[in-house]
Image (cartoon, rainbow, N blue to C red; front, side):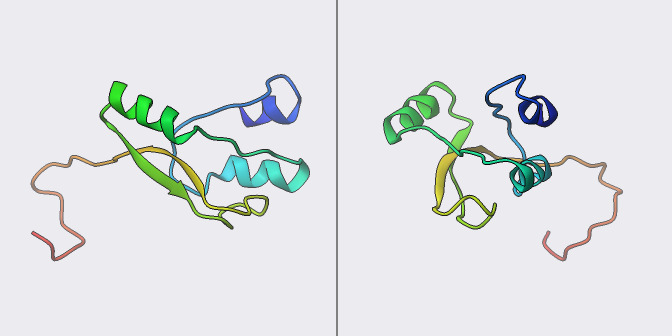
Length: 92
């Protein structure tokens, strides 16, 4: 999708990923990009319809062209492993 955006084949692309997103970082080195999001009311509506969403913020400076904190929605991530996989933390 990043290549399609850079080539002008699409105007935008949203997706869920951890930040910073390498494709966004790369795009903004060669293109002027616009970060856009939802209004507070739109975020509330989305969260009501999809309770798995949560409030999230992309902090300013995460990307060079992102000069203000960017309110958005996020999803929780987790991993499941077999009980015999060694722990890397002392947390039970």
